[in-house]
Length: 413
Image 1 (cartoon, rainbow, N blue to C red):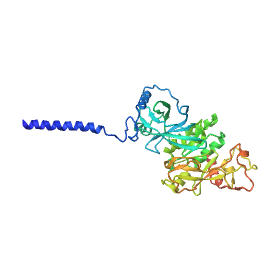
Image 2: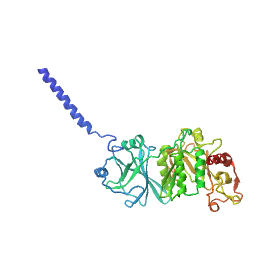
Image 3: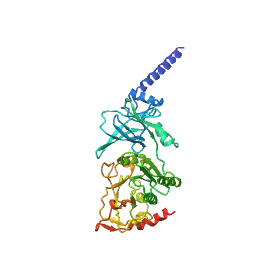
Image 4: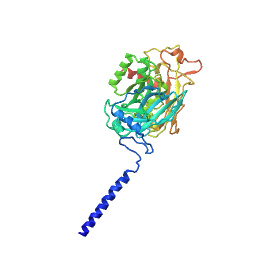
Protein backbone atom coordinates (compact mmCIF):
# COMPACT_ATOMS: atom_id res chain seq x y z
CA UNK A 1 0.00 0.00 0.00
CA UNK A 2 2.87 2.34 0.79
CA UNK A 3 4.29 1.84 -2.71
CA UNK A 4 0.87 2.42 -4.26
CA UNK A 5 0.49 5.85 -2.63
CA UNK A 6 4.05 6.70 -3.60
CA UNK A 7 3.33 5.85 -7.24
CA UNK A 8 0.16 7.98 -7.22
CA UNK A 9 2.14 10.94 -5.89
CA UNK A 10 4.78 10.57 -8.60
CA UNK A 11 2.12 10.42 -11.34
CA UNK A 12 0.37 13.48 -9.90
CA UNK A 13 3.63 15.47 -9.79
CA UNK A 14 4.41 14.44 -13.39
CA UNK A 15 0.97 15.54 -14.64
CA UNK A 16 1.25 18.83 -12.77
CA UNK A 17 4.64 19.45 -14.43
CA UNK A 18 3.16 18.83 -17.90
CA UNK A 19 0.29 21.25 -17.31
CA UNK A 20 2.57 24.01 -16.05
CA UNK A 21 4.99 23.46 -18.97
CA UNK A 22 2.23 23.80 -21.53
CA UNK A 23 1.22 27.20 -20.11
CA UNK A 24 4.80 28.41 -20.15
CA UNK A 25 5.44 27.26 -23.74
CA UNK A 26 2.22 28.81 -25.01
CA UNK A 27 3.44 32.25 -23.92
CA UNK A 28 6.55 32.09 -26.06
CA UNK A 29 6.46 34.39 -29.12
CA UNK A 30 6.43 32.81 -32.56
CA UNK A 31 8.21 34.09 -35.65
CA UNK A 32 5.15 33.95 -37.89
CA UNK A 33 1.64 32.69 -38.21
CA UNK A 34 -0.08 31.04 -41.15
CA UNK A 35 -3.64 30.90 -39.85
CA UNK A 36 -5.66 34.10 -39.63
CA UNK A 37 -2.72 36.34 -40.43
CA UNK A 38 -0.10 36.25 -43.15
CA UNK A 39 3.62 35.70 -42.98
CA UNK A 40 5.54 38.55 -41.38
CA UNK A 41 7.96 39.04 -38.46
CA UNK A 42 6.62 38.70 -34.95
CA UNK A 43 7.83 42.24 -34.28
CA UNK A 44 4.77 43.50 -36.18
CA UNK A 45 1.72 43.72 -33.94
CA UNK A 46 -1.75 44.02 -35.44
CA UNK A 47 -3.81 46.70 -33.67
CA UNK A 48 -7.19 45.71 -32.29
CA UNK A 49 -8.80 48.32 -34.55
CA UNK A 50 -7.54 46.46 -37.64
CA UNK A 51 -9.02 43.21 -36.36
CA UNK A 52 -12.31 45.05 -35.95
CA UNK A 53 -12.13 46.26 -39.56
CA UNK A 54 -11.55 42.71 -40.70
CA UNK A 55 -14.77 41.68 -38.99
CA UNK A 56 -16.67 44.23 -41.07
CA UNK A 57 -15.49 42.41 -44.21
CA UNK A 58 -16.84 39.10 -42.97
CA UNK A 59 -20.20 40.69 -42.22
CA UNK A 60 -20.23 42.44 -45.65
CA UNK A 61 -20.82 45.64 -43.76
CA UNK A 62 -18.61 47.88 -45.92
CA UNK A 63 -19.04 50.13 -48.94
CA UNK A 64 -15.68 51.27 -50.35
CA UNK A 65 -14.43 52.15 -53.86
CA UNK A 66 -13.14 49.41 -56.17
CA UNK A 67 -9.72 49.62 -57.87
CA UNK A 68 -8.95 51.54 -60.09
CA UNK A 69 -10.08 54.52 -58.06
CA UNK A 70 -9.08 57.84 -56.56
CA UNK A 71 -9.02 58.28 -52.79
CA UNK A 72 -9.03 61.93 -51.80
CA UNK A 73 -8.08 61.11 -48.25
CA UNK A 74 -5.12 60.49 -48.12
CA UNK A 75 -4.87 61.65 -51.79
CA UNK A 76 -4.17 58.33 -53.48
CA UNK A 77 -4.78 57.39 -57.10
CA UNK A 78 -4.87 53.59 -57.05
CA UNK A 79 -4.15 52.17 -60.51
CA UNK A 80 -4.08 48.40 -59.95
CA UNK A 81 -3.28 45.56 -57.56
CA UNK A 82 -1.25 42.55 -58.74
CA UNK A 83 -0.04 39.34 -57.13
CA UNK A 84 3.35 37.79 -57.75
CA UNK A 85 5.74 35.19 -56.37
CA UNK A 86 8.83 36.84 -57.80
CA UNK A 87 9.78 39.03 -54.86
CA UNK A 88 8.76 36.66 -52.05
CA UNK A 89 6.84 33.45 -51.51
CA UNK A 90 3.79 35.46 -52.54
CA UNK A 91 2.93 39.15 -52.40
CA UNK A 92 0.25 41.64 -53.46
CA UNK A 93 1.38 45.01 -54.79
CA UNK A 94 -0.75 48.13 -55.21
CA UNK A 95 0.49 50.60 -57.85
CA UNK A 96 -0.35 54.08 -56.62
CA UNK A 97 0.34 57.69 -57.53
CA UNK A 98 0.22 60.32 -54.81
CA UNK A 99 -0.68 63.99 -54.96
CA UNK A 100 1.13 64.72 -51.73
CA UNK A 101 3.21 62.91 -49.17
CA UNK A 102 1.41 60.64 -46.75
CA UNK A 103 2.57 61.27 -43.22
CA UNK A 104 3.20 58.40 -40.81
CA UNK A 105 0.27 56.19 -41.77
CA UNK A 106 0.36 52.46 -41.21
CA UNK A 107 -1.37 50.50 -43.96
CA UNK A 108 -2.70 46.95 -43.82
CA UNK A 109 -3.87 44.34 -46.30
CA UNK A 110 -7.13 42.68 -45.30
CA UNK A 111 -8.34 39.59 -47.16
CA UNK A 112 -11.79 38.09 -47.61
CA UNK A 113 -10.94 35.16 -45.29
CA UNK A 114 -10.03 37.49 -42.38
CA UNK A 115 -6.29 37.25 -43.02
CA UNK A 116 -4.25 40.36 -42.25
CA UNK A 117 -0.73 41.39 -43.28
CA UNK A 118 1.19 44.68 -42.93
CA UNK A 119 2.00 46.90 -45.92
CA UNK A 120 5.50 48.06 -46.84
CA UNK A 121 6.07 50.90 -49.31
CA UNK A 122 8.57 51.77 -52.02
CA UNK A 123 8.66 54.99 -54.06
CA UNK A 124 9.93 55.77 -57.56
CA UNK A 125 10.33 59.41 -58.57
CA UNK A 126 9.39 59.83 -62.23
CA UNK A 127 9.22 63.26 -63.87
CA UNK A 128 7.17 65.48 -61.54
CA UNK A 129 5.21 62.76 -59.82
CA UNK A 130 5.86 59.92 -57.43
CA UNK A 131 4.85 56.34 -58.13
CA UNK A 132 4.41 54.24 -55.00
CA UNK A 133 4.26 50.50 -54.48
CA UNK A 134 2.30 49.29 -51.47
CA UNK A 135 3.28 45.68 -50.96
CA UNK A 136 2.09 43.04 -48.51
CA UNK A 137 2.82 39.34 -48.21
CA UNK A 138 0.10 36.84 -49.04
CA UNK A 139 -1.21 34.45 -46.36
CA UNK A 140 -0.89 30.72 -47.08
CA UNK A 141 -4.65 30.45 -47.48
CA UNK A 142 -4.64 33.00 -50.35
CA UNK A 143 -1.56 31.40 -51.97
CA UNK A 144 -3.38 28.07 -51.99
CA UNK A 145 -6.44 29.59 -53.68
CA UNK A 146 -4.38 31.48 -56.27
CA UNK A 147 -1.79 28.91 -57.31
CA UNK A 148 -2.83 25.45 -56.14
CA UNK A 149 -6.63 25.30 -55.93
CA UNK A 150 -7.27 27.73 -58.75
CA UNK A 151 -10.66 27.74 -60.46
CA UNK A 152 -11.98 29.73 -63.42
CA UNK A 153 -13.70 33.01 -62.53
CA UNK A 154 -12.72 32.76 -58.87
CA UNK A 155 -13.12 35.93 -56.83
CA UNK A 156 -10.53 36.77 -54.19
CA UNK A 157 -10.92 40.16 -52.55
CA UNK A 158 -8.23 42.30 -50.97
CA UNK A 159 -8.70 45.53 -49.03
CA UNK A 160 -6.23 48.28 -48.20
CA UNK A 161 -6.82 49.97 -44.88
CA UNK A 162 -5.26 52.27 -42.35
CA UNK A 163 -5.58 51.46 -38.67
CA UNK A 164 -8.85 53.41 -38.62
CA UNK A 165 -10.71 52.69 -41.87
CA UNK A 166 -10.81 50.59 -45.03
CA UNK A 167 -9.87 52.72 -48.04
CA UNK A 168 -10.70 50.56 -51.06
CA UNK A 169 -11.00 47.01 -52.36
CA UNK A 170 -9.61 45.06 -55.31
CA UNK A 171 -9.64 41.58 -56.81
CA UNK A 172 -6.68 39.22 -57.03
CA UNK A 173 -6.19 37.11 -60.12
CA UNK A 174 -3.48 35.51 -62.24
CA UNK A 175 -3.08 35.59 -66.03
CA UNK A 176 -3.42 32.33 -67.92
CA UNK A 177 -0.28 31.14 -69.64
CA UNK A 178 -0.02 30.41 -73.35
CA UNK A 179 3.03 28.17 -73.22
CA UNK A 180 4.29 27.00 -76.62
CA UNK A 181 5.88 23.57 -76.24
CA UNK A 182 8.61 24.02 -78.82
CA UNK A 183 9.79 27.23 -77.14
CA UNK A 184 12.35 26.70 -74.42
CA UNK A 185 11.72 30.11 -72.86
CA UNK A 186 8.46 32.06 -72.56
CA UNK A 187 8.38 35.68 -73.71
CA UNK A 188 5.75 38.33 -73.01
CA UNK A 189 5.22 41.55 -74.97
CA UNK A 190 3.21 44.41 -73.49
CA UNK A 191 2.07 47.34 -75.63
CA UNK A 192 -0.41 50.23 -75.83
CA UNK A 193 -3.44 50.59 -78.09
CA UNK A 194 -2.20 53.91 -79.47
CA UNK A 195 -2.75 53.18 -83.13
CA UNK A 196 -5.91 51.58 -84.43
CA UNK A 197 -4.79 50.76 -87.94
CA UNK A 198 -5.36 47.02 -88.13
CA UNK A 199 -2.66 46.65 -90.77
CA UNK A 200 -0.10 47.45 -88.12
CA UNK A 201 -1.70 45.34 -85.41
CA UNK A 202 -2.15 42.05 -87.31
CA UNK A 203 1.31 42.21 -88.87
CA UNK A 204 2.85 43.02 -85.51
CA UNK A 205 1.16 40.06 -83.82
CA UNK A 206 1.92 37.61 -86.62
CA UNK A 207 5.55 38.65 -86.90
CA UNK A 208 6.19 38.26 -83.18
CA UNK A 209 4.39 34.91 -83.09
CA UNK A 210 6.77 33.90 -85.89
CA UNK A 211 9.83 34.73 -83.78
CA UNK A 212 8.51 32.99 -80.67
CA UNK A 213 6.49 35.41 -78.51
CA UNK A 214 4.07 33.38 -76.38
CA UNK A 215 2.02 36.16 -74.72
CA UNK A 216 0.74 39.57 -75.85
CA UNK A 217 -0.76 42.14 -73.49
CA UNK A 218 -2.61 45.13 -74.99
CA UNK A 219 -3.26 48.02 -72.61
CA UNK A 220 -6.34 49.76 -73.97
CA UNK A 221 -5.95 53.45 -73.14
CA UNK A 222 -8.80 54.57 -75.42
CA UNK A 223 -11.81 53.09 -77.17
CA UNK A 224 -11.10 50.22 -79.55
CA UNK A 225 -13.45 49.83 -82.50
CA UNK A 226 -15.55 46.74 -83.25
CA UNK A 227 -13.24 45.59 -86.03
CA UNK A 228 -10.35 45.54 -83.61
CA UNK A 229 -12.30 43.37 -81.17
CA UNK A 230 -13.31 41.01 -83.97
CA UNK A 231 -9.62 40.34 -84.60
CA UNK A 232 -9.04 39.77 -80.89
CA UNK A 233 -11.93 37.27 -80.85
CA UNK A 234 -10.40 35.45 -83.82
CA UNK A 235 -7.12 35.03 -81.94
CA UNK A 236 -8.98 33.90 -78.82
CA UNK A 237 -10.59 31.09 -80.79
CA UNK A 238 -7.46 30.05 -82.65
CA UNK A 239 -4.90 30.64 -79.89
CA UNK A 240 -6.56 30.75 -76.43
CA UNK A 241 -4.78 32.97 -73.89
CA UNK A 242 -2.42 34.39 -76.52
CA UNK A 243 -3.69 37.99 -76.16
CA UNK A 244 -4.92 39.77 -73.03
CA UNK A 245 -6.71 43.13 -73.16
CA UNK A 246 -6.39 45.32 -70.06
CA UNK A 247 -8.51 48.45 -69.75
CA UNK A 248 -6.25 51.27 -68.62
CA UNK A 249 -7.57 54.76 -67.98
CA UNK A 250 -4.49 56.11 -66.26
CA UNK A 251 -1.08 57.46 -67.14
CA UNK A 252 0.97 55.30 -69.49
CA UNK A 253 4.07 55.70 -67.28
CA UNK A 254 2.80 53.08 -64.84
CA UNK A 255 1.97 50.43 -67.46
CA UNK A 256 5.49 49.03 -67.34
CA UNK A 257 5.15 48.26 -63.63
CA UNK A 258 1.72 46.70 -64.00
CA UNK A 259 2.95 44.50 -66.86
CA UNK A 260 5.96 43.34 -64.88
CA UNK A 261 4.03 42.54 -61.71
CA UNK A 262 1.07 40.87 -63.44
CA UNK A 263 2.95 38.78 -66.02
CA UNK A 264 6.37 38.27 -64.50
CA UNK A 265 5.40 34.92 -62.97
CA UNK A 266 4.58 33.35 -66.35
CA UNK A 267 7.46 34.92 -68.30
CA UNK A 268 11.12 34.08 -68.54
CA UNK A 269 11.59 37.35 -70.42
CA UNK A 270 9.40 40.44 -70.69
CA UNK A 271 9.49 43.85 -72.37
CA UNK A 272 7.24 46.76 -73.36
CA UNK A 273 7.37 48.12 -76.89
CA UNK A 274 5.09 50.02 -79.26
CA UNK A 275 3.12 48.47 -82.12
CA UNK A 276 5.45 50.10 -84.65
CA UNK A 277 8.47 48.37 -83.07
CA UNK A 278 9.71 44.88 -83.93
CA UNK A 279 12.08 42.59 -82.03
CA UNK A 280 14.62 41.11 -84.47
CA UNK A 281 16.87 38.22 -83.35
CA UNK A 282 20.34 38.76 -84.70
CA UNK A 283 21.86 36.35 -87.20
CA UNK A 284 22.09 33.32 -87.15
CA UNK A 285 18.95 32.98 -84.98
CA UNK A 286 15.43 32.95 -86.44
CA UNK A 287 13.56 32.92 -83.12
CA UNK A 288 14.02 34.76 -79.84
CA UNK A 289 13.62 31.70 -77.55
CA UNK A 290 16.40 29.88 -79.37
CA UNK A 291 18.67 32.93 -79.18
CA UNK A 292 18.00 33.50 -75.48
CA UNK A 293 18.40 29.81 -74.62
CA UNK A 294 21.74 29.45 -76.39
CA UNK A 295 23.12 32.86 -75.39
CA UNK A 296 21.93 32.98 -71.77
CA UNK A 297 20.38 29.64 -70.75
CA UNK A 298 19.04 29.83 -67.20
CA UNK A 299 21.72 32.26 -66.07
CA UNK A 300 20.33 35.42 -64.52
CA UNK A 301 21.67 37.99 -66.99
CA UNK A 302 19.32 40.69 -65.68
CA UNK A 303 18.80 42.67 -68.91
CA UNK A 304 19.48 42.60 -72.62
CA UNK A 305 19.88 45.98 -74.29
CA UNK A 306 17.78 46.26 -77.45
CA UNK A 307 19.79 47.74 -80.30
CA UNK A 308 17.84 50.58 -81.94
CA UNK A 309 17.44 50.64 -85.72
CA UNK A 310 15.16 53.46 -86.86
CA UNK A 311 13.64 53.09 -90.33
CA UNK A 312 12.38 56.16 -92.12
CA UNK A 313 9.76 57.02 -94.71
CA UNK A 314 10.97 57.80 -98.22
CA UNK A 315 8.39 60.11 -99.85
CA UNK A 316 9.17 58.61 -103.27
CA UNK A 317 7.87 55.23 -102.14
CA UNK A 318 4.66 55.68 -100.15
CA UNK A 319 3.39 52.78 -98.09
CA UNK A 320 0.13 51.11 -99.09
CA UNK A 321 -1.91 48.95 -96.75
CA UNK A 322 -1.56 45.88 -98.95
CA UNK A 323 2.16 45.74 -98.23
CA UNK A 324 4.20 44.09 -95.49
CA UNK A 325 5.67 46.79 -93.29
CA UNK A 326 9.05 45.12 -92.83
CA UNK A 327 9.20 44.60 -96.60
CA UNK A 328 8.39 48.18 -97.57
CA UNK A 329 10.65 50.13 -95.21
CA UNK A 330 14.30 49.55 -96.06
CA UNK A 331 15.69 53.08 -95.56
CA UNK A 332 17.36 53.22 -92.15
CA UNK A 333 18.67 56.24 -90.28
CA UNK A 334 22.38 56.00 -89.55
CA UNK A 335 21.72 57.48 -86.09
CA UNK A 336 18.68 56.63 -83.96
CA UNK A 337 17.09 59.22 -81.69
CA UNK A 338 15.09 56.68 -79.71
CA UNK A 339 15.62 55.99 -76.02
CA UNK A 340 17.21 52.68 -75.16
CA UNK A 341 14.87 49.86 -74.16
CA UNK A 342 15.54 46.50 -72.56
CA UNK A 343 14.43 42.89 -72.43
CA UNK A 344 14.20 41.77 -68.81
CA UNK A 345 14.23 38.59 -66.80
CA UNK A 346 11.52 39.34 -64.20
CA UNK A 347 13.19 37.27 -61.46
CA UNK A 348 16.17 39.62 -61.39
CA UNK A 349 14.31 42.94 -61.36
CA UNK A 350 13.24 44.77 -58.23
CA UNK A 351 11.29 47.57 -59.88
CA UNK A 352 11.83 48.30 -63.53
CA UNK A 353 11.76 50.99 -66.16
CA UNK A 354 11.82 50.23 -69.89
CA UNK A 355 14.27 53.09 -70.41
CA UNK A 356 17.51 53.98 -68.64
CA UNK A 357 15.95 56.07 -65.88
CA UNK A 358 14.90 54.51 -62.58
CA UNK A 359 16.01 51.01 -63.45
CA UNK A 360 16.37 48.83 -60.37
CA UNK A 361 18.13 45.51 -60.95
CA UNK A 362 20.15 43.08 -58.90
CA UNK A 363 23.06 43.04 -61.33
CA UNK A 364 24.41 44.80 -64.40
CA UNK A 365 26.66 41.92 -65.42
CA UNK A 366 26.94 40.51 -68.93
CA UNK A 367 24.76 43.05 -70.74
CA UNK A 368 24.70 42.19 -74.45
CA UNK A 369 23.15 43.60 -77.60
CA UNK A 370 21.86 40.47 -79.28
CA UNK A 371 18.38 41.69 -80.28
CA UNK A 372 17.49 44.56 -82.62
CA UNK A 373 14.55 46.85 -81.91
CA UNK A 374 13.45 47.95 -85.39
CA UNK A 375 11.29 51.08 -85.30
CA UNK A 376 9.07 51.80 -88.30
CA UNK A 377 7.11 54.91 -89.33
CA UNK A 378 3.54 55.05 -88.07
CA UNK A 379 0.96 54.53 -90.79
CA UNK A 380 -0.83 57.78 -91.52
CA UNK A 381 1.90 59.82 -89.79
CA UNK A 382 4.76 59.49 -92.30
CA UNK A 383 5.22 63.23 -92.78
CA UNK A 384 5.43 64.03 -89.08
CA UNK A 385 7.09 60.95 -87.70
CA UNK A 386 10.25 59.90 -89.47
CA UNK A 387 11.06 61.23 -92.93
CA UNK A 388 14.39 60.19 -94.38
CA UNK A 389 17.04 62.91 -94.25
CA UNK A 390 19.43 63.22 -97.16
CA UNK A 391 22.87 61.69 -96.51
CA UNK A 392 21.70 60.42 -93.11
CA UNK A 393 20.22 57.07 -94.08
CA UNK A 394 21.31 53.84 -95.72
CA UNK A 395 19.46 51.12 -97.60
CA UNK A 396 19.20 48.03 -95.38
CA UNK A 397 17.25 45.01 -96.64
CA UNK A 398 18.44 42.55 -93.99
CA UNK A 399 15.16 42.31 -92.05
CA UNK A 400 13.12 42.18 -95.26
CA UNK A 401 15.27 39.41 -96.72
CA UNK A 402 15.12 37.33 -93.54
CA UNK A 403 11.47 37.63 -92.50
CA UNK A 404 9.20 39.29 -95.10
CA UNK A 405 8.30 36.17 -97.11
CA UNK A 406 7.76 34.08 -93.98
CA UNK A 407 5.54 36.78 -92.51
CA UNK A 408 3.55 37.09 -95.74
CA UNK A 409 2.99 33.32 -95.83
CA UNK A 410 1.86 33.35 -92.19
CA UNK A 411 -0.65 36.17 -92.76
CA UNK A 412 -1.91 34.55 -95.98
CA UNK A 413 -2.87 31.29 -94.23
